[in-house]
Amino acid sequence: MSTQSNTEHTLNDLIEIARDGKDFYTEAAGKVKDAELSALFTRIAGVKSEIVTSLSSTVVATGGEPAKHGTMVGSMQQFYGKVRATLGDTQYGYVAELEESEDRLLKAFKDAATDNDLTPAARQEITRFLPTVQETHAVMRDRKHAMKH
Image 1 (cartoon, rainbow, N blue to C red):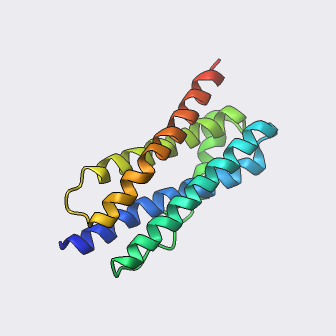
Image 2 (cartoon, rainbow, N blue to C red):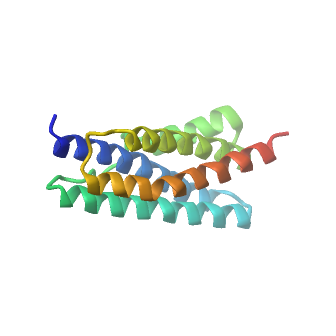
């Protein structure tokens, strides 16, 4: 695989996972009753949106086609089914599931950051967003631990 096609593939994986996160956070912000939590979810959805937009531009700049969807069809239904089935429709349920989506994104970013077969522009974007991804992951992890009974 060429550096260019590897870059497109790697960035599109990140775009899809970040887009899933954005959708989950936007949806959850409308469902939770806690105004502060809703505001936090909305803020993090904005961060994910910025990642999607920026990485999509980088894919276009390498001559590729950016991903237009999340990772799976019906992921929202699966997400909510899982929240309700495992944890009930509670604030903790949303936080726990969103923290899981942060785990996925952070792992994908860390893997991409060590991929030597990326264009310099792509590596720069990944490096630029990594601290933000780590920060939102830490926020949700801490929030989840604080809510545990």
